[in-house]
Image (tube, helix red, strand yellow):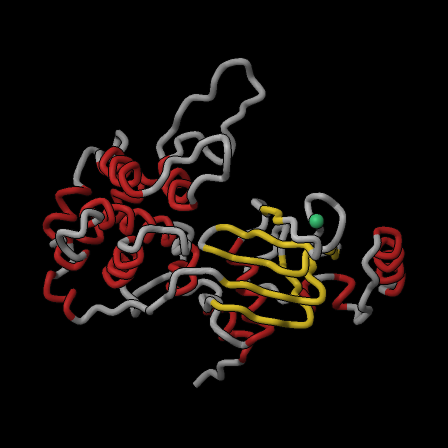
Length: 310
Ligand SMILES: [Zn+2]
């Protein structure tokens, strides 16, 4: 039997179903959102969950569909039959699925629509991420407007329809999902740093007046607070990377919520996988030199490390 090291266990939990659930469970969501996510997780199966690029999209799409069918509170997500789900997901795969309009209607009735005055709702952000037909960026260099392509939800509806076609209704009684409490995860640390392969950077307040010492992960969003009380939003920091970084220090599962006080948080980013250990993937930390934070010093240390390799 193969031995499971703490590092291997962390790698597995970095892509596990409970972490993917925590990323779509913001604390601000309506009360009936969490039961929809848990039922979607049950259907996809705690035991049969296979991490892949598509798996989180399918979890989100199925959660949104179950929410759209149960947000009025007339019935529980488990009361939505497999046959009903199959019917909702059936449809020609050469056009956008009809459930998109249905989900938009359900969200419009339960969650305030985002506007330009604030950051809007993470649930709308999540929905927009799967119905977006323009890829990661809406802006093209050309004068011509970009042409819409298929949304991630179109392929996801087809995959879910195929999956549910073989799903026996009686399986449902035995199916379980991890129980994940909606966010937030709050971290207080003396030092919070972003680590790529060859750089280490302290996380600054957007007003550049001090370092971020409190980080908050709530669903898909990462925000920080500096010592002067400014709140900064970090759209380019992946919530999953922060969660795994915290798990590495605390030993808790990456899906855990609550408040943690730790000496230092090193967040892997810029192409490093979620489970990367900054201590071995960063050239400076690997060399055993705990560098000072500062541009000149970091470059000097990189040079020293490179020289030392000869
Ligand atoms: Zn500040």
